[in-house]
Length: 226
Picture (spheres, rainbow, N blue to C red):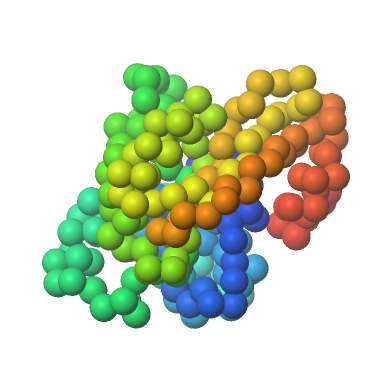
């Protein structure tokens, strides 16, 4: 699967602090978000989960040939089984993740491109938001952060799901393709701590294939040409 703008946005936007030791990327696909986190941080343990066999193999290859191979590891598993196994015995606080990121599948409507792997990667049915949020709440450390990107139209419902698991929004960035376009995506950052929510907007292009200064500032370290 090709690298999409959503993954690049999340990998560049997710908060990194000096306290981040362990990271989990849920549904890593080609591994791009985990790789971006490795490039941006000194996190010593960056783990990823991927259910699709071909994508899993590609992410493993990408991890092994990267400069951060010693810090990256991918599990071939579904998120539900990963959560069940990880929490079978209550994990110590030190075993929980400081940062969890996910660019989840999000087409709740039935869609078909004729490519089963691509459809599964994009359809909500392969990882319902409810299961994503409840699983994250079990794996995130008390002072950890969860960052994700979803369709803007799903934002209100997603925030409610998160609150049901005691996860509260700390940052929200709403993304538009251009100034005149409708808001398309919401970048959301959660923690277990209620804070004043920092809300802003990001516009990607001024015109076709011409990026805004804000988008370039956020992502320039990850493009060969910009």
